[in-house]
Amino acid sequence: MPMLANGATAPPVPDLVLSGPSLLAFFKTDCPACHLALRYLDGLSRSIGSGDRVVAVSQDEPASTDKLMRSLGADLSLRFDHGLAASEGFGLEAVPALFLLDHSGRVLASSQGFDKADLNRLGGELAKLLEVPAPEFARAGDGNPDFQPGCVSRHLEPESDAAAAGIPDLYSRRTGRASRIDLPTDADAEEWCYESGYADPLPVVPPTVGRVERMLAESGLSPDEVVAHVPPNFGAASAEKIAANAVMAGCRPEYMRVLVPAVRALCDERLDIHGVQGTTHFAAPLAIVNGPVRLELGFACGSNVFSNAARANSTIGRALQLILRNLGGAAPGRIDMSTMGNPGRFSFVIGENEEVSPWGPLAEDFGIEAGCNAVTFFCAEPPRPVSEHKAREPGVLLRAICPVLANLWSYRVCKRSEAVVVIGPEHAATLGRGGFTKRDVVEFLFENTGVPVSEYDGDGGEGTHEAGYYDECVIRGVRCYRKFRRPESVRVMVAGGPAGKFSAVLGSWATGPRGSQMVSYQFE
Image 1 (cartoon, one colour):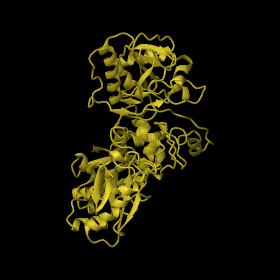
Image 2: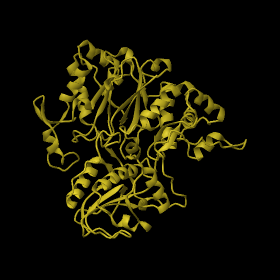
Image 3: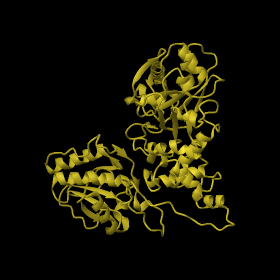
Image 4: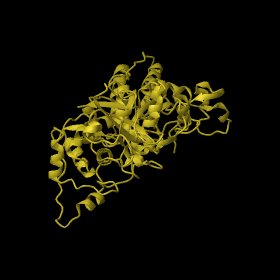
């Protein structure tokens, strides 16, 4: 059943008797988004100070719930949804799920997932009903994300005899050592890795103790040192476990120099790999490497840059995907439910061809000086090709890219997507000779990419319902809706081989604070 709509009467919650307006928050103990919400709701409850006006409804047993509350330092009024009948009755799909109820139990407003704007809105409405000052308790820029997707409601989880997951400690800097497994001498280690679920469908290098220790030694980190917690299961990516996955992927030990900061960047909340790992969209995390490390470790930056041209690109990208799978839990068909998938979910790493670029490197766009090593992540669709072999002027060349940009996500959807445009060396030379700076290229693509207003003919297709929010412009005499929200929605870099006047366009997943934002990390 769908989630209760405004105006509906809420079903009973065990041991809850309403004596006035209340804010109910359903949660489960192993959901990181719930942990964030509970911290803020505790602050709301303390500021309002009106008894059972903020009620946390646990989908788990008292022991694990009390342990979580102690770890959060929260003192919320608790109820327990024994049997999960209330969760089903409220029509929950995800938690945290918030419902503002009046004194009669009628739903006034609701929200799912962690969203600071919704928290402040619901808290303000509750304060108004109670005739107390409205607190701003979920502030932007306080170190926590503005938005984080929730977790599936407990009553929708597949039935299992296994023990419930423990509460993840997202702030731990140390974790347990990786398991040692002794196989019979006649066992096939590669087949064992595959059958045990640790490998993608390709053969892996068995992570023997000696191989992992050699890989680990290059990181300079302690085996139990936590580099990041990997969504969506938030498994602890210790240096040792990163090394084990690097071995399986076929990495050389010196690749740990890139892989460790790449894991940190990959798990940055702004990138929202949590959402990307569970989406039905095509997106996969693309890693773009800048700096001297490209040449030192042999990254492919030229011909076949998106292909199987270099061990560094292929194995580091594969290691990242194995880490997402083995530590994050996003295996295809379970959490990873992409409708069509993306070949980049095997490996998706490229180097920028800085030596032939007329401009500064991509990482410079994010405040990292040229000449420094950096890895930048963009959650991307597969590349879309651009062919333009006749253009001799920058404007003519860039006009060939604009229609490809216009088709990103869905043709008539505007202001939602972002793009990385990978300019091939021959195209870059044309733009450089024409005196175009990188900013000139970005401004041209922004100003000249749109969808004709005539395409919005009332047929009800995707993107047509939001047309009233789009920005209208005129492109070559035609009334259009501008495709992108702002010029910075388009990023430009140079990569690829010296022969062939080709470029590529990569579209994004959902963008902005509610989606994925590009991140760039500098490293030694």
